Image 1: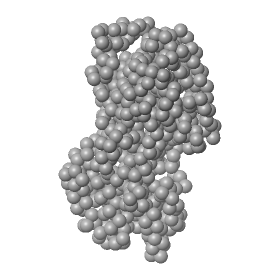
Image 2: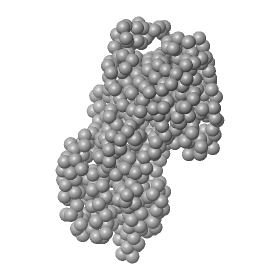
Image 3: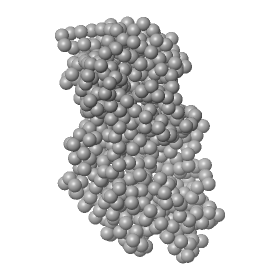
Image 4: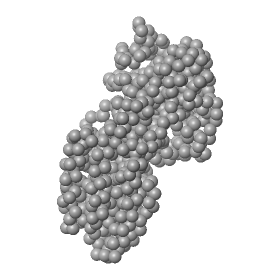
Length: 630
């Protein structure tokens, strides 16, 4: 453990021994007779506009607190006496909420000693079931199951700690793991999550609930202390969602994106911004929460608990203090995950470009280092397929380079169907262990070489050679420049291991593209993507339909759902031979009625690039220097 992590552990663990007291003000989690850090006084809640009450244990417990509704309290008491599923994927969906309800119901005179004992036993069942995922040797600190079990266990054990020595001991252990393993892992990735935005909920929901509950219970300002010791990883993770929300609605596609509302900002998101804004007085996060309310006018609170948490923590007056826009570009995990988002601006139809090049962290992450996407009101350069764990579709197509905007190889001796190396990180106990695995090259798949953000453009480059097997690829540097508001220039410097191993440049599309001279055109709705090839000068282009990898067609086992992009077309471009090959493309995302700017090849000594609409981009093919844009 690093010295600063040990210091934080000692600092934040110190109050635990003092909290195993039988005399505690109840309720204490988030609400109480008096206000405190992350705790709202009940007297302040009473006059507030009530949320739309739902058939839910927390809503019933809150109705008892603010309205004295005894029927609601009886329903909540009955529910918390029954343990939910002990499956590791289900614990996070009931254990913390039953524990919070248990705290909120302490003042209810209809909550008998026998019922309290049964409720405690039910919570202990859940607490014990969580242990293998964060205490035992099979744990993986980068998988959603770790926070999804450590944090609910810590929260429930904290609530029971005055009444149970077992719970008090469990709280101490779980709290230590969160500080020593989970938070360092989050900081290592700057708060971003390799599993994508759908599964990020299973990281951030339990973590934020525990941190807020801890602060309300102990009075410790844990959010500020984490910021001092680990940087702004919590805020940075929420900003990762803000930047990745295209038009404020649907998310950038990386990792496994679940169909339906989990691909959007609508489902169980708003409250997280309210919570952290409340804890840290962050106007930017409060402003994004307000924007979500404006976007989803038919009900941002459509999911179960958004309304309840916003009832506690929403601060509209804070949102009004957001006097400046966030910078248009941001990079998360330069030396780890390598997620970059480049934006034309913050209006609903502004272009959003994503790029990623980093290392492998485990489940739900794809073998797609170097992938980019382009969105302008519609998905233009997309990701192939539908998320489905159907075998062999998931392993042989969906997670591979064949379903992404990358380069694959064909020819004798190519490994892994010409795609990137398949990797699986099943166990990892700490950031230090992960660094050891990286040093052995087993998880090394890409490195960001540079990242620049300027008023009129942004640039990012990466070496992704390590993502491929050396028997196929001896060098691959991808560089991308985004010329605001809508032009993307991409240079790929590719070196295959053998001359008869031929690279293919792929671009995934939702609709069927049209091949034209030196490029292609894609129409999606009223938006068009114009693709202009500048290098190689001679190449064969074709359109491929279906979920095809290395000549085999795979089926996902399900049809498209709402918000699935279902990209089932792609452009394939092949120069006909391998060795050293440069792919240079200009992609223009045209608004309705827009036309592409003229583009031509530009050279200056060893540098090469493109002149587009009066601006010139010149790359160093090695990627050792950021491009010149003039």
